[in-house]
Length: 138
Image (cartoon, rainbow, N blue to C red; front, side):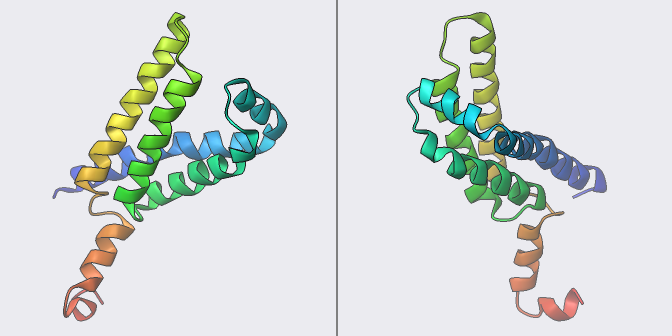
């Protein structure tokens, strides 16, 4: 794998995951308002701490390339559910947001199937788990 491919994998993870980290952190500052918005869509506001944890911790895990497949699948599922719950209105803006969420979920599923790439904790852990790898990677 070339340096450009490795850098592209890392950059792609940062771009996808950054959105989740920023969204999760912003929900902390607008906690009550976000709970109200969730309730207006029929989602219990009590789920907000779990949403924040998934977005922030999941986003950080993706950036680091840690347990990438599991995290990417969880975030893809979350993103599809959010699309249907919050962006199902017939107006053009909500349809655009709906399609954006589905596109992000698609990217996350590709990430889940292909892995984080060479510059990730997943790759490091795989290298270190091979017999004799401690000596080779010292």
